[in-house]
Image 1 (cartoon, rainbow, N blue to C red):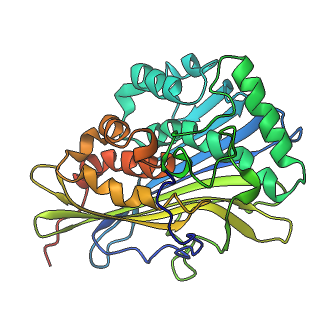
Image 2: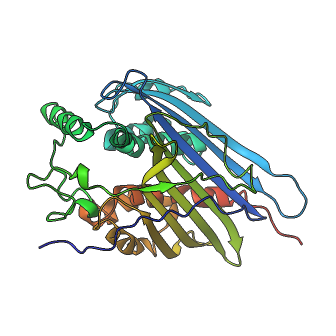
Image 3: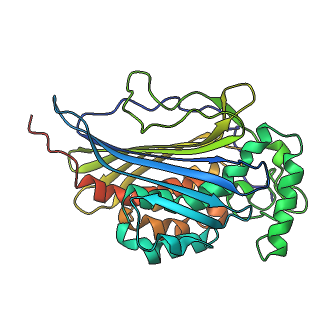
Length: 340
């Protein structure tokens, strides 16, 4: 039975909204580039910032920052890593492969900095590295063949191999996204042209992100949070995009998520996930199922989301957006009081 299909999601949200008085904004980005070309080890540069916008005339304030530089192997193993701020156990991530293994090792070795911008970046290494190679589809004609060869190499090394059936909603068994052998239909992927995330009237709205040209990929996140009555309100954005040969940018994934969290209990009471740009017609179905998280404690989302929205019930990338909300209760403690 073919999974439910939807109109292709091909319209991005544009630049980020203006910051609200009395809010905190976390922005993160992970940029990927290949100094030695496709199929070779590549460099991932992560940057993150927590930024407070007070009420009234008080100046905005940088609450925390973080960054990393990772050299990743074609099999998504960490070959080398450095970070700011440094951590005594950081080098124990070397040799770890992206995915469940990297997140488990991260929680075990660096769990004491959970909730910080650096931890969010390192947690996102798994998802960012999974998608990074997609950018070559904008630049080479044989990208699909190279991707298939990489999948075969992964299988021979004990990985999942080429079959993606039921790994997520978009690749549910019988979906239009899958070839007969279960491999993804990379040629049939949809994408959309996008503009800059930075708002032209808000130069401080994002941490500095360098201009990209050539085959370079970026995963960018934004989480805005503020108080409204007894609620913590959240507006989150997520985009996987990269530079294209025309000089612009192309995105393959983009979501916008609106959430309401009970400030006293930390429980999610409302959620709206908007699929804006996604590669296949089946993908938007995950946005409907995301409401399963209503009634759960947000601080536990890093573990709860993969359980509640596993395999074909969820979208790998929307799950990452939801998992990132786990830090909202901690950040909310730093929100200013409105005395005005």
